[in-house]
Image 1: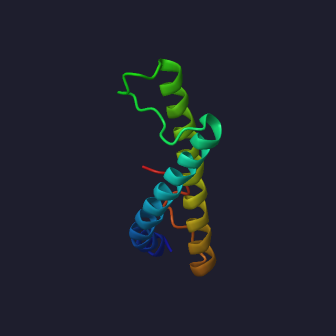
Image 2 (image 1 turned 90 degrees about the vertical axis):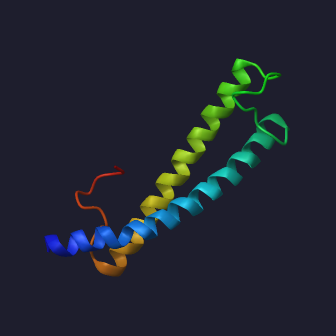
Length: 99
């Protein structure tokens, strides 16, 4: 059984990579829409935007980080559940999170 879990974990890595990439793209779109709704602006401030204050820059970073964390967790969890339903085995070696 231990060998099966190890093989499944290795096989899941490319699937996890693709899900992570897709989740990142989805999170980016969600952040853009959220920023438009919050501030009625097309572009969120960047840390190096000279014309933006600390408050704006930190707010944008906090909102972006929260959205990325939620989307990443939802995508990872959904992928793991699909793998478990298909194979009967959870894809992580120790049931834990990311490295």
